[in-house]
Length: 279
Image 1 (cartoon, helix red, strand yellow):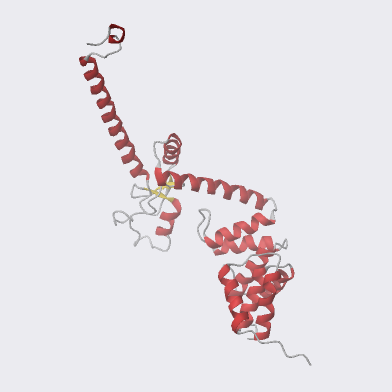
Image 2 (cartoon, rainbow, N blue to C red):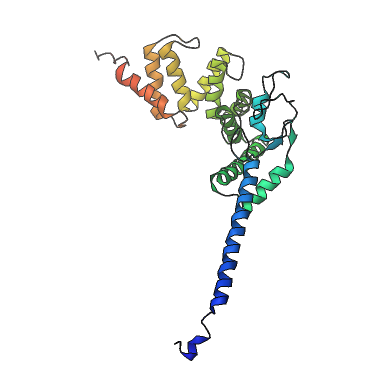
């Protein structure tokens, strides 16, 4: 038998049962709510990227897509050949901004209604979008470092930007006009290879020389590589290749990659002409 002093704290059996039933009902309601939210989140995911869209648009098939993904699908297809990537039925090329969808995604992610990897990826892309906007603002204001950064982002398709070699070159060119060393190197290579701009080897070599003079490691690498293989109008010349590859470690602007450094190092180990004996 319970002591009288403790008996008032013991829940009657009927009340315990009612509380358990209420807890079960609450859990079931939570499950149904969670299931509804998950289904809604699935509808918001772009069918092409399988991610929550940062710039959602509604296509003529009635589905919501990431703008860049559906634009890539539409690009290069004639009106007669264009079909929905989901239903494979014919559709038009018109896209409408899905502002309400963007707002709903933002609210659901911020509230925690949508979580996990998809929410984290969406938040990361939003931060990248903000960084691109801020960098573009600085670049338009004359910041040469920001111009160069935009050039590399467009070149490599970073920070949520699609690869666009034409825009990449335009930003590199603007930065190069302000003697930004990495942009001079990148501009020179684009001109030599004709990527994003019409090939112009004379102008490319001029910019390459300017990059080398400012201590840009990649400019020295391109010089050495051109002489190593006889590219871009440069004479195949082992001594010149060795000369420019040897300059790379002393460059103040470390703007080439490890693969290029290894190519240069391997050349110096295996193929570089030996110095003539002293007489």
